[in-house]
Image (cartoon, rainbow over all chains, first blue to last red):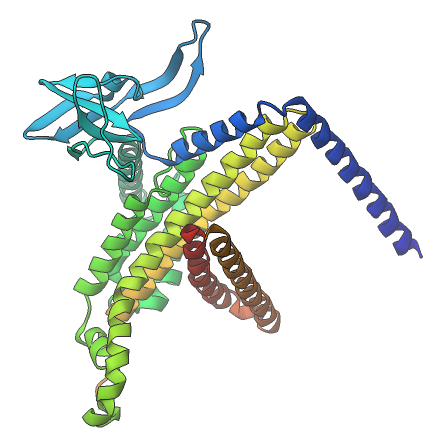
Length: 369
Length: 63
């Protein structure tokens, strides 16, 4: 009886809460009916812009009293190969608002890509609205590249100093090493050893550790207000997966390749294997490429989705513009941020784990009788 | 053209959700039976869940 009444009270409470929320939304909708369309597209554009890489490291921008856009941040170097090396600062673009003139050539930003244009910055289109202007080879130090260099530097000095502290303390972890030692040991004992095996795991350990900390640090960096989205960039995850692909196949043993091209071995006569292998071998060969491909899509999609959800929830605040909408949006964004901290670790773990699994396939050595 | 694609993606997400839910549930059962094998079960669960999740993302990005 008592239990029933508590449920009833809870139900009443939640109905009241829902009613308050709906009233809040209704008020919010009445106020901003005309402008809402513009605001929604603006938020969408802002999120799309955040997800892309950019040529300058701007933290935020605002419009001053004179109606000018003011960007807080730093320009980055742009390196182009266009009949010779062109090196200039991205401040020449003024965030895509002006055409950069370098050595008699003109370059303009269009949809976050650099095109070669005339002095007025004209972009020509074909029928399907794709620019027909020449795209010079782009080796620019973009925002993502800067973030990666930052993580390289952090990792290099952190682990170098940890190694030095081990030597000094006689093999006992000190300082930050007390935090990182269990993680390193976990990767060795619970990821590398069970998947690759006692004999060969040492060869792969350096790669597994590097890729784990690299992805983890980059994921965490993406959650800071720096606003970088490196692991949510398909080119970066492609590079990481390519490394796994190359290491898997270049260190593959004879048994690994036999498993792909002769999976049935001596269990069957050759004329029985032929019709099976017409199907089996293409599948196995496709599998070589699908494994790293799933790695790259998983990391990219997870981080991209996390950023989209987080920014959309923050964007809700500007759509509702009510006393109820803002705390709701803040609360949801806060909760999702905490989940994202977990996802950042989980994705690094899964990438390392699956890489180790694939290395384990490549390192197999069956006992021949 | 657009609506069938979205419905298909939605169906895939439902399937992926059910799949991961089953993996999680089965892992819970397994851990309840053998709490000492928690680490191994968790690892296997995460791998299986990650493999299915990949398909879900592929469907979402097709929209």
